[in-house]
Image 1 (spheres, chains in turn brown, yellow):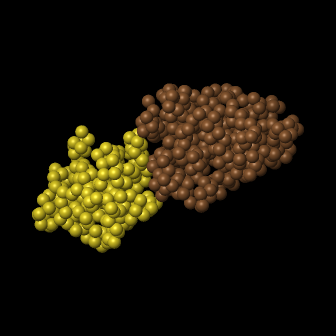
Image 2 (spheres, helix red, strand yellow):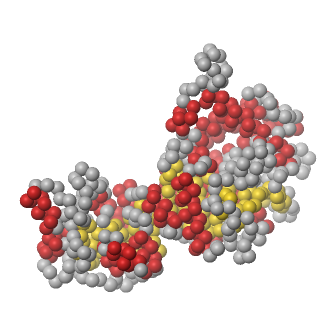
Image 3 (cartoon, one colour):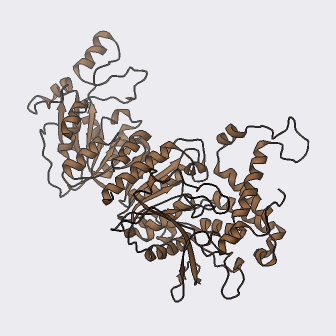
Length: 390
Length: 226
């Protein structure tokens, strides 16, 4: 894991000069945050696909996951790779860009152009670093609502997302029920489990244990905690897969060698794979952003915002929901989705729920899983009929 | 027309079930399959319908029709629903396939102000003949499985069902037995004939003591049992 990345990462550049549309909120409009802080100016970087119809009724908001970004269906400006949800978004896809106006914003606290810890703090002229206020899922959604206002959209046709994106979907539906016609939370939970907080903490400690982290001031001091962030990514990556998928793909196979080397080289393919995943991640992601966004997930507990009852969050919700989970997802297991469904039923909301059989683990929501695409297409098409979208 | 399609599909009971549902009511269909009954109810009775279905394909079919259906089963998932959440809870030809029919029935009566339950009649004369004369587990057109592969693990007769309903404090508001071709048996026939020649029976029930909903009384073909 030698440092092959240039001293200035793609993420650091994108955080200041994103290859995206941007919406900038200036004083006196400031974002009131759960922590009590307020943020101004604030920028939201976003991508759009397709066109808004005359009735402004076909806007579909995609919320990205922890290490995702707004580049949902175009080549990534840093990695040059295809968008992260091209199975779902595009012409003829379930989120058909010939019919729907798809919007994907980078989350608040992210590092692809929306205001986050790598952005410049106007008071100091330096990157915020740990001076950035702690962000919550509700803060992200508040910022997105400002963007949606700015785009002149009153009611979103659908809000969709997986994992941390699914948390935003639930937050949208709970906070702005009248602005969300349909909601599609996938592989997610209404609160982060203790186990998931534990994984988050391991990742954060890995970043902070890197001497180049410099108390979060690495951008000012010209260092990069790449090794810490890579370890965090490696650990997290395991949680996105399943034991059987790992075994099927890598088994105990050795990497480019006939025998064990009796060293701590990456003898096994799985080691080599994880090191690779860690290495490619650090160029496109800001280490402090990783701390803030994992924290946002840890803090998420939708029921707590509604007097301890998740059903209250969705009482008489006019939104139609489709909740999806995957059998082999042990990070956001089906029981988390069932808790959401139970609450929606108790709140007399309209809900469908599918548990999809797959061994692809949590990452299944990003992959070409035909049952997911079929369920999504059925849900979206029927919702579009109900909404009167051609 | 949808009605004839349902009639064709060997599920003649669905039309009778539909006739028991008050227009505009909230309905939960437990074991809703591909959602045909829910769709029929939405079209013909303008109900606000929800479903529970075990198979992923069934749920996908329902979702594609714009129905709100949750993947699950009657044994595990009814407990999650709040009391009196629906005007009608429908369990069509499924009670005999549940692990705990009594608990399921109690849950139906808790969740719904009324429950509509249809059951195949194991007391039908052809069933009795197969068992009595041939000494073999019955396989009929209505009950087409062999003993070793049947999902129907808790069979009952019409009389058995009535007795269970009494035992758990349910009131049978009305009932109808259907013959092989789905034609209702005359309500004037003596009850024991229903248990002998009824292919299946459909019951409209509510929990004893539960105030009758203000909803108008559904139109009924017959009201002889219970």
